[in-house]
Image (tube, rainbow over all chains, first blue to last red; front, side):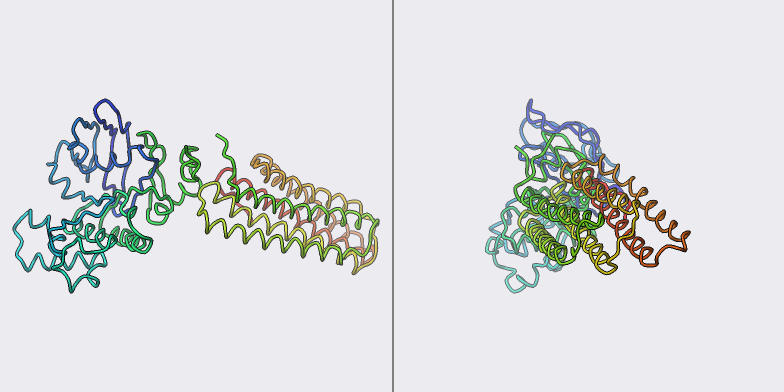
Amino acid sequence: METKLEIKNLNAWFGEKQALKNINIKILEKSVTAVIGPSGCGKSTFIRCINRMHEVTSGAKVSGEVLLDGADIYTSMDAMDVRRKVGMVFQKPNPFPNMSIADNVVAGLKLLGGYKKEELAELAEKNLKAVGLWGEVKDELKKSGASLSGGQQQRLCIARALAMEPEVILMDEPTSALDPASTVKIEELVKRLKEYTTILIITHNVQQAARVSDMTAFFYLGELIEFSETRDIFEAPKNALTERYITGRFG
Amino acid sequence: MTMKDPEYLTRIYEQIKEMNGIVETVSLNIEEGLNNKKGNLKPLLTDLCKEAQIKEEQIVEMCVEALIRYQPFARDLRSITVAMKVAYDLSRICRYHRNISEVLEEFNIRCDEPALMELYREAYNMVRESLEAYFGKDAKAAAAIIKRDAVVDEGYRAILRKYAASPGTSGNCILFNGITARIIERMADHACYISHETIYLVTGRRTDYR
């Protein structure tokens, strides 16, 4: 597998407070990487640096390189282009409440413009099918996205991200607000999606990290402590801090 | 950085220690049997090994429950998988002792063979020390035990060679010593398996075995 993302000497600050310290990591194409670590360790800041969301926070600063297919997203790409190529799914499902289910999926495409009505309908169907939601909503596409259950809303948001054909999808605790059945559906979806996209998923659930990811990165106090194959990290981590975290002996 | 074992692991270790206590009793009896000091061991050892087997099943159940309830990772996960294997090895070691008691009863003879007693002591010391290394999470001691397997293997072969070169010896003695030596040699193998598991438990790395 080719390297999709290469992060070199990445540092991030909120004002004077340094949130990330010299992060170096390579993310392989079409893989799922779990990002784990205790609250405040820099996980969210890390993924927000990958789609240039960190810089929108007042007082936030970034240094280092984030290379997407070899091109630095900070120096050689427009922020909007970056966010189109690197989609994001948040902890709490956030469908646009005033839009129908179908319109939610293609909201980003509509903004870009240039699509015919039929094309948008086709793309809505295609992406709802990709997230396994089509069968559940095909007869009520005009209903508000907010009318769906929490798990369905999250899949709708993933469909919305997929519609932009991102090369990388960042997921920030995508199942933390969902029930076990919806969680299983999202996890299965993550495994399916990696066939054509690269995924980074933040999770506080180490069992989930073990279930869905190929690689796992453990962060602590803004530093990348350990990064290796998920099987290795959960069976025999090299770092004592990692071991303490994944065995629940932290704090 | 030392890590305290979670309570569920402590309970599993207690069961393995109890199982080890049964195997110790079995060993004391066999040693006396081989020294011609005790006879009719088979019924006692059958009961004790049954007890050990029940203990093994309980340990496996506790391990499965711990996997379901706690979904452990890293050393905790290794501790669970290793505990199941150690319990199995102890159960096998117990059955090997029962096999010796069967041989003692079947042949009902005593053949003066000091090398056999020596072989037994060395093998059982390996068992005892492998358990000490396991409970003490001592990978170095475990590695040292594995090296001693060659000594037992050689002791076993030496007994076979001796009888092969002594055509005058009673056929029963050849069979008794040969079969018993073979059982003892297998017992030492299980001490090595426990040691390999201990190394895996401590380091997270598998060593080549079985």
